[in-house]
Length: 97
Image 1 (cartoon, helix red, strand yellow):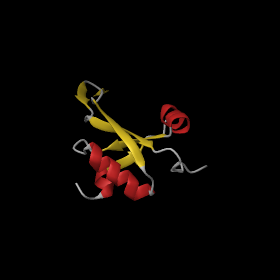
Image 2 (cartoon, rainbow, N blue to C red; image 1 turned 60 degrees about the vertical axis):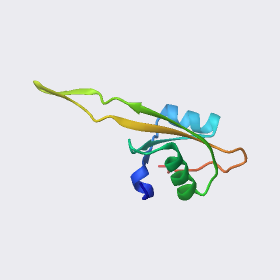
Image 3 (tube, helix red, strand yellow; image 1 turned 90 degrees about the vertical axis):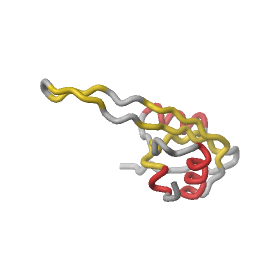
Image 4 (cartoon, rainbow, N blue to C red; image 1 turned 120 degrees about the vertical axis):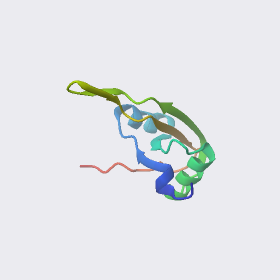
């Protein structure tokens, strides 16, 4: 995978994601399920011009959802926790409304 937008799909902007960002200098992203930790590290460093200390990933199972009598599962997805090195400027991907 070479294209940065294929590796990093979107930032996770939730209460937990924002709290981790502020307290632990860690960014949270939804990433491609095939993306490896080195690919995620290179993509974040290239997109945001920062140095990454470490990357942790977790694969989350898709939830069961119903539409009337029919049921099905959402697809599985992968989340990456990217910790920035000390002294790096925190990335601001939130726009104030």
